[in-house]
Image (cartoon, rainbow, N blue to C red; front, side, top):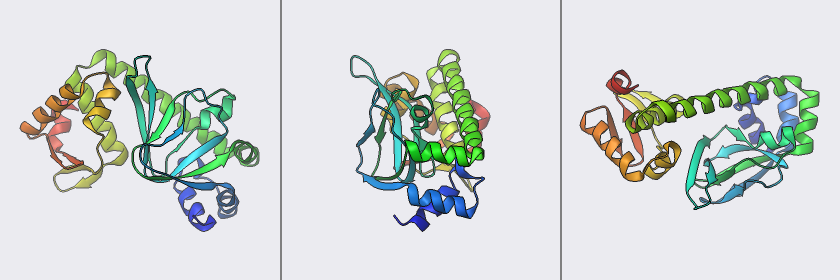
Length: 227
């Protein structure tokens, strides 16, 4: 990927939103582009953190694995999102595993280049703190949902959050083009795939949503009844 294309992508990344063209151009020359096939481990929990990653194409999930091998999905990131910054800021090992869920192209910014950039551009550091705060609030919300909502409510909350992040307004509701698999949703809310399937089937039976292939449309009444 050329530095010009890198610059155009970096414009859409929240933490670099305050940079001028010159700074974006400099940053675009520092990032390294690499392709990852679907199902690739980008990095594992407890590995040393030596780079920040930005998604140029594709999608990844952040997961933890229990002693029994059970997978817990923490979140998904897609084009324009960044991840891996925590280990660069606190010099501790990676806190989770990141795996591609489709063929992806990632831009890698090495630790030294990232820290030098933060020194030269304090606005990026402020943006990083703001994003970390947002993610912490979201983590608190997820913990609260797990404690307070029933399974159907937790499934609904996943879809609503996904609609806010990736949804497109269409005539009959909010279109999510790439919904997580039922197993992914199950691992996000600590339940079984069969339970997620029943919940989605019930929502569809009640006319609250419509699933077609990998996409789903959330009807306006979905938000009124279960939002």
